Amino acid sequence: MSAPKNFNELESWLNEHRVTEVECLVPDLTGVARGKILPREKFTEDRGMRLPHAIVAMSVTGEQPASGPYYDVVEPTDRDMQLRPDPTTVRIVPWATDPTAQVIHDCFDHKGKLVSYAPRSVLRRICGLYEAEGWDPVIAPELEFYLTARNTDPNTLLRPPIGRSGRAETSRQAYSIDAVNEFDPLFEEIYEYCNLMGLNVDTLIHEIGAGQMEINFFHDHPLGLADEVFFFKRTVREAALRHDMYATFMAKPIAGEPGSAMHMHQSVLNKDNGRNIFSNADGTASDEFFHYIGGLQRYIPAAMALVAPYVNSYRRLSRHTAAPINIEWGHDNRTVGIRSPIASPEARRVENRVIGADANPYVAMAMTLACGYLGMKNKIKPKPEMKGDAYLSPYALPRSLGEALDWLRREPDLHEVLGHEFVTIYTEIKELEFDEFMKVISPWEREHLLLHV
Image: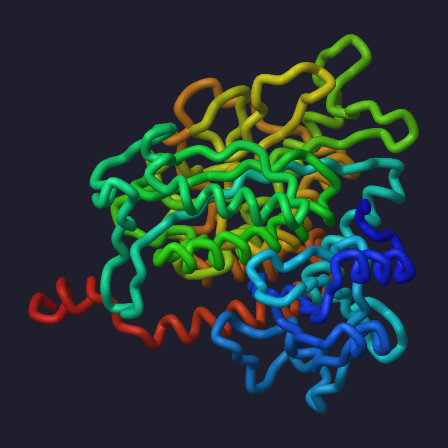
């Protein structure tokens, strides 16, 4: 049967698949699946669950601030929120021994209002702004990741995994079919899992780095696609473990290799007639197209902390490493941060190349759509098109998480569209992570400073 649209259809779906357990999931700020596993009968009886508010507002290490503005949003008494399942998100868990379903939940407070800082709520908020204008945003993500050999020691460098030839990659194999075929058993299982879960994945390619892959998703509505990316990350990590390797979405897991991005193709349709508003009737680029780019250029630097969320994220954004260093834009130009691919007028779109693979997909889609929305609403004109090598232009993005957080705090327009409570929670949590990182001494410091300064 097709995806359930309500609770009655959800019950029928669970019956059809003879489900005995339900994984009740909520994506936290990191994109980690939090929640509970319930027996089918308990899930049907409760149709929801309770969890503390802080569950969706924790650092990647599971911490919360000891004090500060965080508690102007999250009550220090640690109250419960009510999680309600979204029937449209139900998927089978293909690797489970017993018939098990997984369902994403939305977070509500005790008054029945969406918890504003939950990642899914933020994306819902941005989609609502588009709907109020009669616009229908369309997204198509491209998600890069690395396969690595198992590594249980954080102090040991990551290595490419052993393929079916018995050898690991030692050189870059961009777009190599044979290099992908080295991991045929793994990718066959990933595609099988994705098919069983109804994930709309498209092309698989080998990216530039040794052991680096990319999967493309078919274009769709942002909220449903963010759910699919959330499920996909979980699925790939699980499948890789079953083949004695790791899959990682870190932005820069291996020194000397390119980082991993989540390139985001986006366009906007008129809800009444389905026309792509980025194109005029005669096929030329519309004002909305240029204003959307103008919004990305104006606001991406201030929004960087949302899509480069960790200290590691900024290692990816360096010259000549297939990642942008600024927010220049151009047609079919992969050195820029904002690319317009070759396309028909009906498919005219903008590709945001700044976003890292480590970004929470809900937050990432909310960020890029918010920047484009502000551009169209405020009729922001873009800079002239970059026709050459954008790496020859200066850096125009924050160079560290600390700098990015400062920029985000100083941009009231983003606070307004994303929600003040979300920005407060997000910046407080990321400041906590940054403080934790600064307590760690790196090998570089020991190597170059120990005896030289």
